[in-house]
Amino acid sequence: MKDKFSKKELVGYIISGIIAMFGLVLVVLGIVERNMDVVPSKNFLYQADQKVQTALNIKLSFWEWGLIFMALGVIIAVIILCVCAKKADREVDRKLRRQARASSAIDINSEVKAAVQIIEEPAPAEEVKPEEK
Image 1 (cartoon, rainbow, N blue to C red):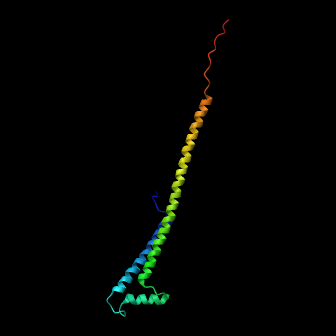
Image 2 (image 1 turned 135 degrees about the vertical axis):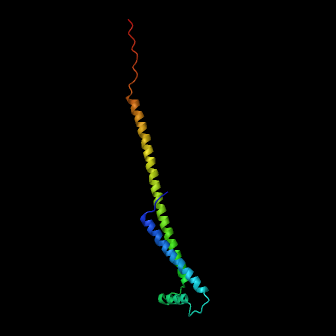
Image 3 (image 1 turned 180 degrees about the horizontal axis):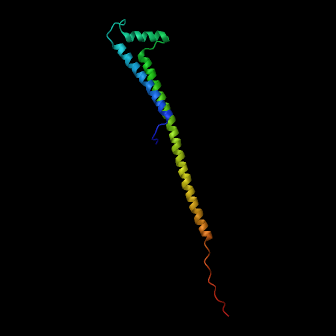
């Protein structure tokens, strides 16, 4: 498991968090706007919402924009999480393969050394019997 975040990963999480928090603020403003007991002409949130709708020419309220931004922030965070998790898994697999190769190389070296020792050991000398005359 990875102990530290890379700089790119950290920046990505911060950006996605900011986007999601902006969405949360918009949702709260939308809820407050709908539940204020004020005449629409004196409701500053309602007026701001209407101005944003006319400026963008899109009929979405603060609440709906907030949901969109929250979803966008979450999607960005999930994509970053998946990419970094895949990268971390590749690093773990690479380390395991290196360890396996190193251990198999050690086993092969010990087998070769044992074979070399067997070949280099002199054969026991045979007893020579004096010839009987």
